[in-house]
Image: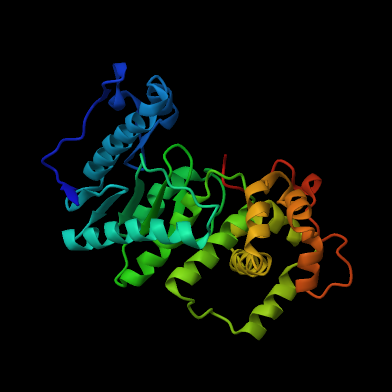
Length: 332
């Protein structure tokens, strides 16, 4: 592990032996709530000038340079720590960063086994984790990924895909809490190459998290959770689940969406080869309905209807016409 302290200045430009002109990093940085955000499209365009075998390395240097600028903006105590497959920007003891780097390296391997055939991690890139020292700074940073006018559910960590894929969390007293967030968000990172619907993405992440870190008690007992599900889900709200919109609700709909996704994926993944074929082909545009029919021989609407003991699947199937243009998903 290496720790990059303030002695190494944040560069104004990035150079690559494979590209004639350096990337003028300083010209493509803008401040959002006092924190530097890089124009990742500009970085992608620059790195794309390199031969295919060198593109990832050039972009990796852009990411590292940006992290050094973010380190400086966050202030004293923040340091960048690096290993072969991970970079951690955090504030605190070097030993804590070393533990997180080791955990990320091990978790890469464990996720690859747990969701075999679906998880993909690049060897020529690093997983990036930013650990903010307080919730206020965390929300100040992640708000740049949300519309200016709107609400989003509270969280202790998330995976940000746009531009530079990375995951973020808030420092906690209990390492186990941070490690759960890392496991959950790294599972998202491992399937970000798949255009899967959000319910499948979250179901995979929650189940992988529970399998690798152990299940934690829920706020409500099974009977109470069932009553909440029955009271919340209707033929209208279930379309929010299929489209992914319900995962961003500021009410109980968010919690219930994650729980329903976990239940549905747990049921469907009972026969892994079939489930793997389904998940590999699933697309957010129809919530995975056609892939489920082709590779598993099942109707997603019937699966949901059976969970809620509905006599008919009518109205419970994914209906893209109902939510076209309002789909929340992991971008391709």
